[in-house]
Length: 256
Image 1 (cartoon, helix red, strand yellow):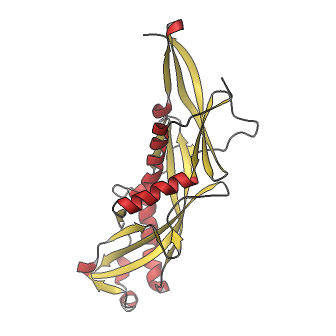
Image 2 (cartoon, one colour):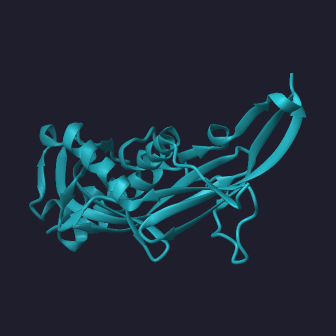
């Protein structure tokens, strides 16, 4: 058995890609702040990976081709805004700035765009980080008034591994929110609402379950079953690709 076994199965790639894209487009009800699951995934050991490690290679271009298809062929992804802590928007200084419209024109949500505000939504593999610029438009209604806004957010995706659940999670972190043509006083209210919505509605993102890539192979000649359970996961960004290293624990048991 070679030191690193490379899996390029289409079904496995579909599972990984499908999970990794969830944080862009879907999210349930807002969650209370809680510690993210598992621990941050470490890079490969400098001394090399142990025998029986599987390597999954995901190119940046592949992720972005999937994104382009979603934007082209599907409805624009959107989530309701988290309005917690928005009461200060009734301040007379906010109303005075002329960006308020009637409530019936206000959807109270944020919509991701394929591009806008000078950026393209996508994944960028840079400096061993998973960067995610997100272009958006949106509106939020307060006391019968509506604030319309456009802009973009700079986010990163941290990969985490929960050994108990044998699951790889993604934790999105929106670092900055940049709004177009909005005065500082209004931006000061809208920015944390946008940032909180993106961070709270999608975390944590389940990317890969260990049972999806666990191995169980009957060996007829030995009347036994070879099993390989996921023991650990490592990751690195290199040459415009995300490399996941899945470390297996191999065991053999009698058949039946």
